[in-house]
Amino acid sequence: MRKKQHIESDRRRNLDLGMGDYRIRSIEPAGSLAPFTETMSGVMAAQFWGVRGTLPVPGKKTVRYGGNTSCISLRVAQHFFIFDAGTGIKELSNYVVKNNIFPLKAKIFISHPHYDHINGLPFFAPLFVKGNEFEILGTNQGEKKIEELISSPMDGVYLPFTIKEFAAQLRFRNLSEEKLFIDDIEVQTILLNHPGRCLGYRVEYKGKRFCYITDNELYPEASSRYSLVAVDRLIQFVQHSDVLVIDATYTDEQYQGKIGWGHSAVSRVVDIADQAKVKLLCLFHHDPEQYDKEIDAKVKQANALLKARHSSTRCIAPAEGEELVL
Ligand SMILES: [Zn+2]
Ligand SMILES: [Zn+2]
Image 1 (cartoon, rainbow, N blue to C red):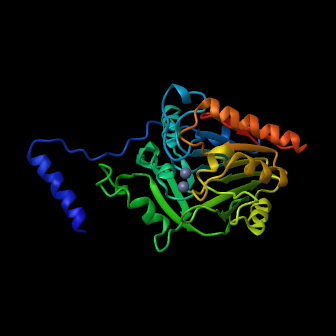
Image 2: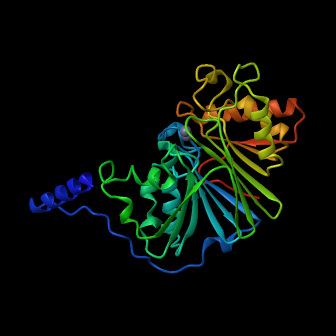
Image 3: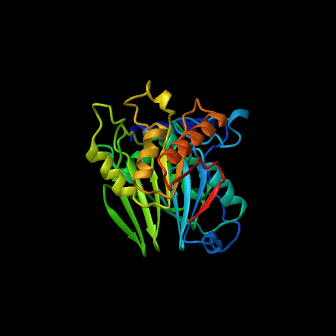
């Protein structure tokens, strides 16, 4: 309360001194178009808006895969889901604004509140548009529920506005390991191996299965931390996925210096995907020290390993803007 009073008095003092009122105002909706879910072919369509982990990586060396952090949208029937709100969500925001998509009703599933998964959210313009509706879903960290985790960094100190400036209707739902139904769409969650609580998601609809598993560390079999039970649990969860988007932050070489950091190396991800008979393995959450050619090398290594195992799984690293239709 005191903090809010301070911010308010700072604002008034700025106005008294002749400075501008920098409060964000809600954007007026410009028109009405059919939701873009109506334009899709196939059962689901996943679009990648940010594929990197930890930090955005702008520059010439990241132009092919893009430099934004985690954000994927998934169109399923008449529903629009968003997985994580890293800086990639700004690209999605630009797309929604450019195509005049209104009203937008979406569910935003957050894996966990590390910066690279939430720091684009305040810049997602549809949140400022009256008539849009969002539900933000994610897990708690200790006593802190998802509403507090999302709201507290937007307290007017670290950003020039607070969550109260959002004009869209906003709801929150705290999740644990559970199954939820959105019409006929089944969404299942799983707790991942990452510092704090982090959720993976599986979406199933009309026999198609999409999995989003980041951030997650898969220990090598030789590690004292390796657990066959944990591995089997994940394999069961992602079994027969049409698309598995999974944390493959490190090359095997890099991983040696990052054990216990909560992220996986390529060969471990290949092992899981092959055992689970995944159709398309999507390497995701790339380390900021990897540029385009290093990501190419990870894909090449993954496909060579899959070939050596006579696996039916195929591997790609989706780039920013790329869409996969399931
Ligand atoms: Zn991350
Ligand atoms: Zn993380």
